[in-house]
Length: 263
Image (cartoon, rainbow, N blue to C red; front, side, top):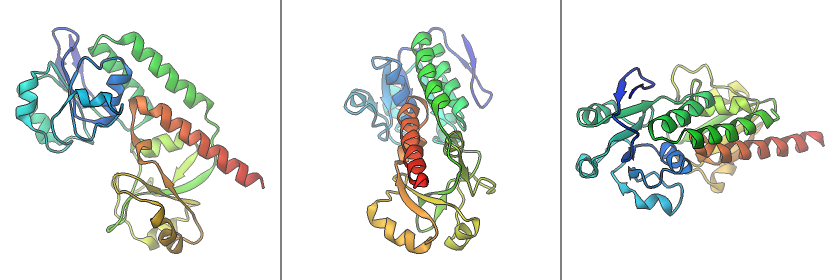
């Protein structure tokens, strides 16, 4: 079977994959959701969901630096990578020995296609179709709000989410407008004055990759006194199976905001 991945590479599989190494947490969680727990033989140390179960797979390193000897010991028949998560060097090294399928996920539709593609490569078409339908149902039931936001992912320097990213696209589904959507890069470095000039209604402080916590809120409220500053679960940026939780969180957030606006 030949499959064309999201970056245009041809990936050949003789049969459905049964020894899969995942190099991205979102992908790993999706594999387990598709009942592929026995087929997942390797994952990164950042792959933490589903909690407990995921530890049965061998830790092969990080998303940016893997232990190739551990992967070689596993003899995978498929490696799943993500363009934004894994380096070209990792992919180039591994594709000389194994089939490596690279996903490029920037929108919810991309994520749904990813689920379907995993199902096709791993003989889980029916499970994939069911998961896609669960997510589509949540998307269809979303009641949007109309608010502008800045989504911060790092401090010192301050970095935020720009356009053409999965987070930006997912929040659009919930009615949120990213004030930095026209930035030249996906994750721009920006100063407080520039953020204030964009006049967001809400400044989100993400719990990952930088671990923003409650203790940061007061300082950022002082920086952005006209804005609602709030923490947001960084795992909302996870695509695939995790979108079920993410969309539930966004729906609850929108409902909370609508109730507040009603007063």
